[in-house]
Amino acid sequence: MKKEQEKIINSPYSAIIVTIAIIVLLLSFSFIFIKTGDSNWATVLSGIFSAIGAVIGGIIAGQLTLQGVTQTLKRDKEEKFVDSYFHKYIVADEVSNDLKPILNLLFLREN
Image (tube, rainbow, N blue to C red):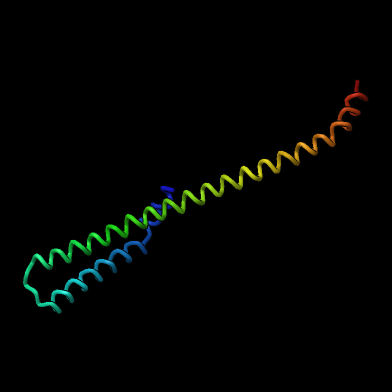
């Protein structure tokens, strides 16, 4: 999973997405500041902190979702392997049961 995360983080698209997100945040803050005309910095800072909190919350939620999907796919792969293993074991057991008489005859002829 680390290799997949490194591919996502090192991707040029991730830098573009982060840049676009920062630009959108800055534009939204400037529009809010211009529209309200509020010179109270407490209001501006609370807006900035709430936007930053929303971004951090989105990152955390995305990471948790990614981990959940990865674990689900891993578990599904393991279940498929176990199911196919038992099927192959049953087929191999049937083949060995079918070949036992032939093998017994072959070994008896050599003795």
